[in-house]
Image 1 (cartoon, rainbow, N blue to C red):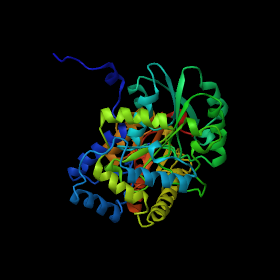
Image 2 (tube, helix red, strand yellow):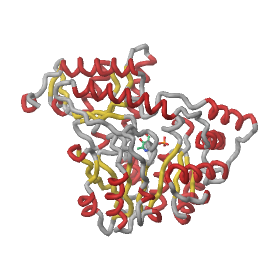
Image 3 (tube, rainbow, N blue to C red):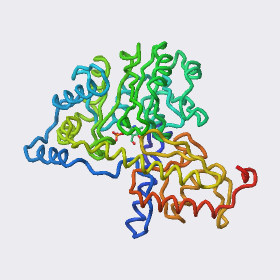
Image 4 (cartoon, protein in one colour):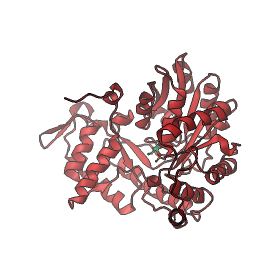
Length: 407
Ligand SMILES: Cc1ncc(COP(=O)(O)O)c(C=O)c1O
């Protein structure tokens, strides 16, 4: 007999991106040539100067607990970055360094959400948002970001969704899995609706630097009336190719920063000391200007993926403006059959593509994008081309259901 588990674990789901990536890794370990386009991380390496800073931290025995909200050098670098890049003034004490941007979001939700409070999150949107809201005791409530609206929320619809129970809204631009990146005027239009209400805006800006449309990134903290209500979340994972170092941060008004620090001090003590020193070097300019090179590579790959996807009959994919994901509508194939097997939904499609075509993609369903698949273009050009070839071949083998044969 087991003593049993808390109710919150029963409604929780494991991150599907990690499940698929782990299954693909297992197949690769068994010598199978899997094309893996499921990863949520750049294929570029951490900059050398940053790696050296991590090694130096170890050599210098900088290997102990730090202040819960992070070392002063890193918080000063972040404060400088927010001033330089975002024209936002945060004192270093208004910044909390966390174990990844994910942990900044989780800590913020634990600090602001009471049992039963509603938390608005984008649909389609990153699959961790509703789960983290639930862990905090909140009630996650999706706000639609429809394909017809280029995956943007409609400000009037948002206004209608906010009610007395709403405590916070999570925003994400550039977004995972849609690649939608708001222009400054779109951010202002959405932000002005949020500013009317007394709710927290958790602004996930982790893909800020991965933007392909030449537009400027505007934080919700820049919108009139929102500075005091916004929790700006960012980190080094994506821009500096440091996903495994686990460093993110948030910037917010002092009482919020203090509340998250209290939570963090009891749950993790402090982020990793070694990674913090490395992150300070990264944010201070230690990537040797390599970021534009990576962005240029992503633009080229994005164009390959979008062109190839839209050339497949029955598949359509809007052009992502940021991050490194394409979200393609494959609903025309769902309900179809192949080798006597029915492909009922996008999860079954991704499983079949992995089993039979050795192609790892992520289903849209866990992101609230039923009928879609997510293709990560954080992979080498030739692997992307090979992946698209396998997808084309695989879909051609599926006998499409009659109802959508003309789609
Ligand atoms: C939208 C979004 N926010 C946050 C994160 C987490 O970033 P970190 O690795 O810094 O925790 C991810 C990672 O995939 C993401 O896609």
